[in-house]
Image 1 (tube, rainbow, N blue to C red):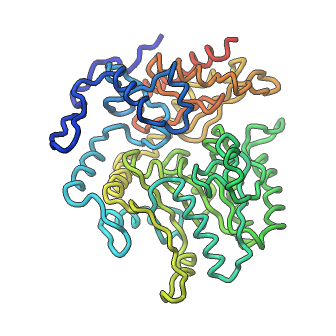
Image 2 (cartoon, rainbow, N blue to C red):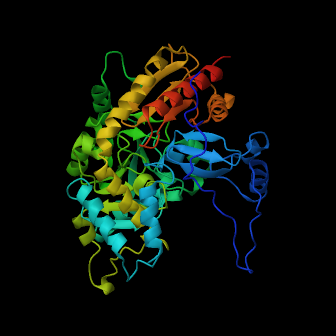
Image 3 (cartoon, rainbow, N blue to C red):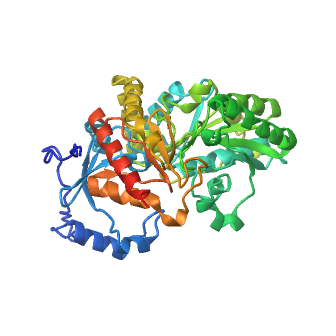
Length: 481
């Protein structure tokens, strides 16, 4: 059994956060904190996201005291390798010294100011740099403060563009089966994962759903490119029939992350861009999860050689430090809203923390790290190490597929390998993998029966080997009966 690479003693640079609030008007935190008492206090006051809280009666939440690199440490000193980048946001490790220093410096000058009628250097600099790195043709940056909000901005902006252009009939959106774009009502409406959407269906606008191009169900002898091209024919038919009422098509380029990490070929995006141009429909690229190097290029759209009309970014934009999102768009869309006040064409959408100075500074530091460390080149090596570490997984009798796009790798567990019959979701086999991972010191959070890796880019080959070993053990345990 490989030793947990985190079992090397405490890093002297990791300092426990203090609870010594001294203002007399503020209640002071308890001075003695451990896993048990913080977990109990949590259970008394916090409602956790994406969680059935009753589960925590038998599986307590894990209090984290500090982080360093790919590791998280609880109050008992146990360490956990963050194999999923804390919900896909962390790019360069926890407590990264470079990002720390940048945010600390900004904190001394300006923490936040409204971005209506005011501006600040971090917001301007980050917009300039994002637009210089993005696909050619994107010239304007609109800030929001989380991924779902970015989707709402893009949907509203697309609809409003057509309204300002005198095409009021364009009110609908086309989405892909198995897609996910966030939890707010507009974002849910253009998603297609029932687990999140079904309950709120009565509140949602109705999107037009095209078949997903994901390559899990390839026909025998068919390549990814051939499969994704064949699936595009149905999208083409939808656009031909509904173009006059459709504002935009929204897709997650290359990987449908919350949709079980299903993947497809860039040729689909190339064909989609051509069709959107031909039918007069916007293309919204939701790169909230797949942007900033996750797929092997800085932006996934690069692999298809396309420029969307709206590029939605969040998660890794600040290296996992602070909430921020951005929607990049074209000048012709910006110009459709530009006019005299009395024309009432302005885009009246706002968030209180839009363009937060601390978040923008973290974003600038994150882009610095990409440049100075040649991260994309290093990631190509690391993605090869992940592929090699999981090479044997395909031989497992209950693994249907091991698929990978850049620094995202997924392993799909099934009841029957030959027919690909899935396990009943109520058996919660992914939960078995999760619990085993925690026992061994790895944070794995499967999507149903799909175990996946999306680690910070500072992970080492040794740590990848340990991560893969623990995942395989978890899969063995989860499929043993």
